[in-house]
Image 1 (spheres, rainbow, N blue to C red):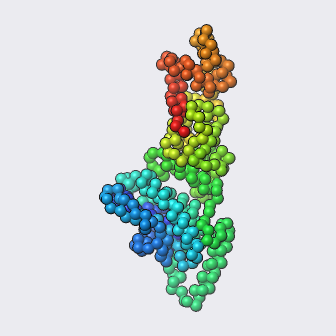
Image 2: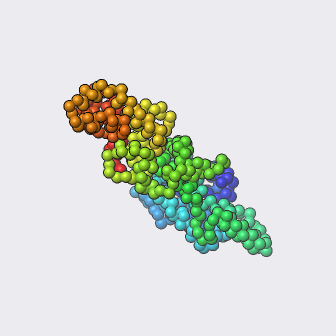
Length: 386
């Protein structure tokens, strides 16, 4: 989308909840002020104009610093609404309405108004993502004020030609007239995953999104749609076709690493920021325990089989190197022979870590560096509230 052209469609937000600033506009990168200032005034009064559709007039929200209520508007701007059918307008308005909960989260949670609100408009990448997901097809009907000065005799010809072009583009993108635009399920899932993980992290959201995308790409979980595109798609079956509200543990922590979890549930909710934070904390402890070099791979909870294998090797090597020590520890104690035995450490090192810590390490970890690390690991990974 070329956002530098004033007649290119885009979405924007006008919010009365901009902290101490009260009213601010939020736009995607590259949108000039002159592209929306004239639209805003009219959009405050009505939900449709010659070059926009707006929702939120009845969705009055309370300002942060006062007891007053005011509308919070989400506007699809720069489209020629005269060239839309009634069904098409309704579909676009439905798409806008479906984004109001995302607008609420952006305004109340993701934007640091003390820092970002000083300038108007506030530029956020999320609006570009939303446009590409929901409104990409409307670029074919960009509003052009010059058309309104054309002769009435040739206007029907232009309208007919435009409709034919629009029908062709709609067919190309796989949509029917009256249906709201749809994005590939792999692209939708990738953007949803990136957004969820970015929202869970503290700090600069734009930087978080970049780091999350980079890490997911390194893990071969997402890939660019094309070299010249900033849109991502899911590239691995590990996260394809899943409900992010209920993800099987093995899809995040593969292999038998899930045995570290004490909780009986076999699924997690990646839509929960706290669960994402807990999982990342667990992953960091795994990296630290296995003395792996942390190469900025702690922006997502996804762990690799290579990291799991190195963790297990660290446990197995410890037990092997301490054979004589453990022989003395477990001598005459049948319970410790089972939970701290050499065979268990060799065949199931993760079970050894849990069971031997429970029966021996929990009482003696202050004397052995290994069990100090085990405690930190099990505290993070063994008590996550799934």
